[in-house]
Length: 214
Picture 1 (cartoon, one colour):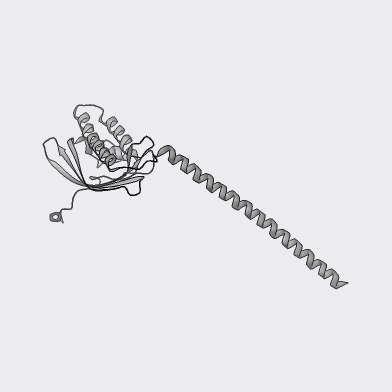
Picture 2: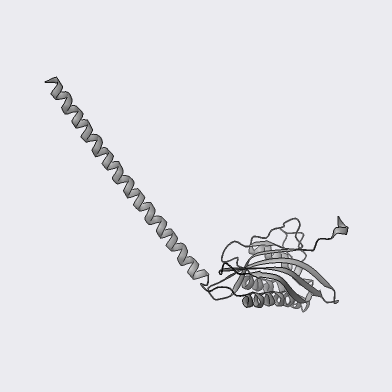
């Protein structure tokens, strides 16, 4: 009789164990399904955001060259507005809004003449570099209000293998009002926004290496 009771107890325990395992498995499946649904929803939302912010068409070299010309003209225009007593700060703000992607994503910007605050990851920091007047960046004298009369790009190459981003590297030359020309090295990375305009998301500039200065 004792053996029968013991056997029944073992059977009951086994059944309980099976039911518990089934319940845990069902809960795990439910959590897995919910996690999968959440991940899918997140990817869908990200794709929707990208479709609203970015163009689906590939970037061409011609578009990069056109964007470079616009950038150079913008620098000259800011200096001209400054010289003529206009609102050069507002002009520079429009320039940054049009040419850089601060409203799309993070922007990696290392200006030529920045030593204390080398990297300008915000709109205000970039604006300070171009026109000065921001107490948070005492080193800024206003690069664009020197002023310059011409900016010429000389590309070593343009890479657009990834289609949605293009990278250009080379030298650009800034002509001042006295006819002097300053040569600067650059690397620009561009994306295309939903309106089809190229926007800079990475910009690194530096003066050429001078072996006599070391």
